[in-house]
Image 1: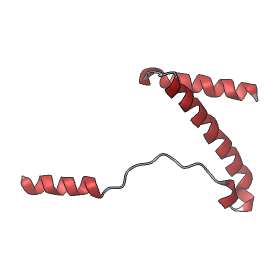
Image 2: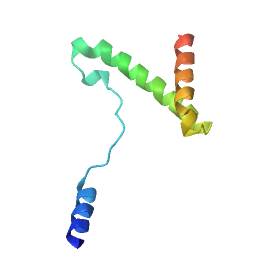
Image 3: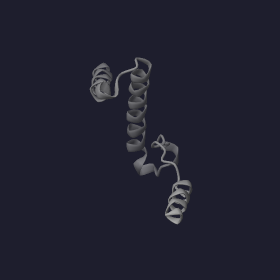
Length: 79
């Protein structure tokens, strides 16, 4: 039993932490894919902006998806 606990602890400590997706850098993408990378980066920035608004307004987890969708729709309508 102790060996199982030790192995489980080592496995948990050895695993890498999961991180959020990094922002796309259009300058590090092949020229033929640069336009798509710029669009993806703009979308990521909009998503982060809405997530920050949700955090600042302390939106409950159960309401977060609806809030984010509404925020993204509002930003899309402005453009």
